[in-house]
Image 1 (cartoon, rainbow, N blue to C red):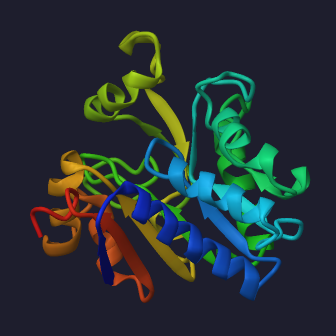
Image 2 (tube, rainbow, N blue to C red):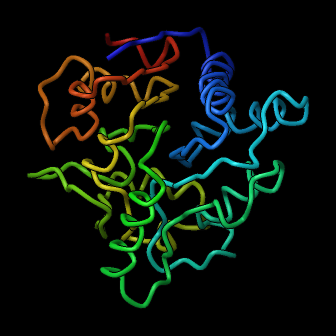
Length: 241
């Protein structure tokens, strides 16, 4: 595990975008795992800028998102499908058929999870997985638990996660209580992982993930075992290290 402590959110975003861009430049048909939420927005903005400057080309890139809310349609403004379109996909030349996001409206969630895993496998696995981290140490929507969930699965969201995500909704009652998420095994099979964290509210989770014991109670702690994991964190998020 490599730790890069940067000055602020803007520097974190630039460094993360440069890592993703380098991956695409070195391998034009890279398979990139993507995250949502506030943390990667700056990275996506920088990637769009690099694309418009003709520094990177998304035409052969395939993407797989970490998660999607259960019960939200693709066109719902709070869905992660909508988020990805608004923050990245509609601004670059990625092909629609190369975009993969779990279907939160699938009739059979079990079949959807199996389908998603098979698509990742068929694509040759994930070359670079971008992660955020929840205040409770979750990655994707893998919440603190008694065990590590291996593959893509339906997860019940913790109260802390629901409360944290309520800022994106009109009320906490509107926040979905379940989501489809890549599992820990799927994430760990990515050849390279980059985790981003910004702000003092993430400091405790970062400390436990980096310095604590490896436990399902802090899902991000499993990244201590990954052969090529880099944490890019600003000074506030690193304040307890």
